[in-house]
Image (cartoon, rainbow, N blue to C red; front, side, top):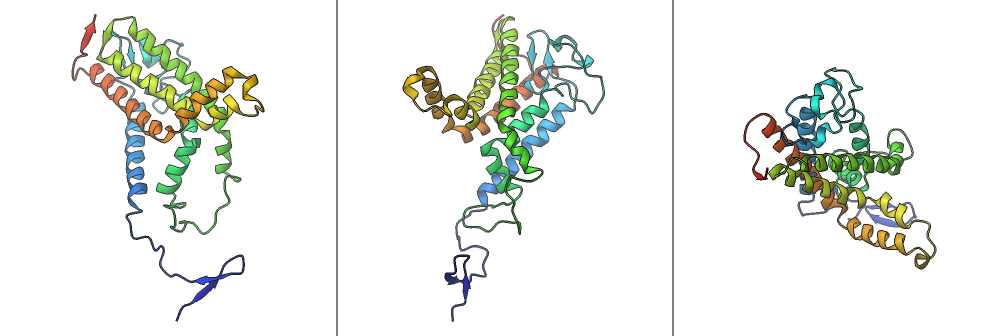
Length: 262
């Protein structure tokens, strides 16, 4: 005998006791996301509080995790002064890290990623939410997701600073570190410009693209990047970690930089 339940619209449907009828490995994607993000956050947290091995003065390699470097520990890496005290709980890039974190946390893709993998809200399509109630992004703390556009502006400034770091490093010659720095900068710009907010800024509220050819071309470019927003989000996590690890290895004398042009 089939048991029925009533939907909000008054229609009857079968009452299914099982959590989901999906027979595929729907849990694999959120599990991989959980492990990947957890590993990256752990690595980044450890690195920003190490307070060492972040700068190679000979080639002016500065890891993006410490840029701009703003404490007295920075030494020659302090291109913008040292307004921060040498306190253990204050990272060298304390002025920029909160904005970068806000930009990533409020990113549309990352919302989907950590909602599903950390909050199970929902963990996958056709799988019930792990919470009994959901108020959307209208209450604390999720209401701060609406600050994404403002975090985008800050991310653009930080990308400019990272580009400046790559330019300064280029003045010392050309090595593998320079190549890694530029790859990271290019990927960061691609991820930042592929942001949904950037796409809206470029073409939003325009009634006639023909009257705004420059904005239309930029909107078209950003729209193409936007289709790769998820991939760029993960690629930049990889390039950031690779750049930081390479510079850390050089600063710690684990290996030498492969020089192409001295």
